[in-house]
Each structure stands twice: as structure tokens, then as C-alpha cells.
Length: 84
Image (cartoon, rainbow, N blue to C red; front, side, top):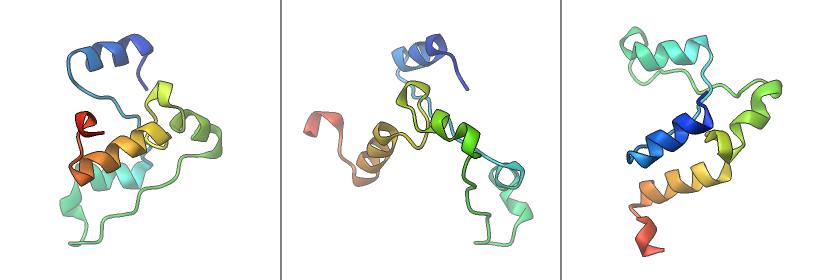
């Protein structure tokens, strides 16, 4: 979780902020993938219902917000903002 000021500062410097939910197993898979068999990393867990609203709001840069998902898809396709 980042404050609005921190998000603004990071984006002003050319970076980006995305708030992502990880449970203990998912975080272990992210930090120590060598502990898992090859190709057997755990799937990403859904956030708990109480936190779902946080991760779907763009003002928090939640990874489930429509704007963040659209930007991720555009990067995967190699489309830049100027080409829109």
C-alpha cells in the first residue's frame, strides 16, 4: 500500500506503482522459486473479500483495476500510449 503522495512521486519520476496481493505461499514462490519444482509455482491467490475493493480501485493502483489491466495488456501487445 502506498500513499497518494508516494504514488505521485514515483510516477513523476517515470516509474509505476501497482498494488498486488500475495498470500504466504505466493510470496514464497515469488522470492524463492528454486524451492518449487520447475514449472510448478503456485497460482496467484485472490485477495480476501474485505480487501477486494482496494485492489479494484485505480486510485490505489490496484492490480485488478480496469486501467491497470488495460495498461498491462497494451504492454504485452507492444502498443504505446502514443499509438492509440
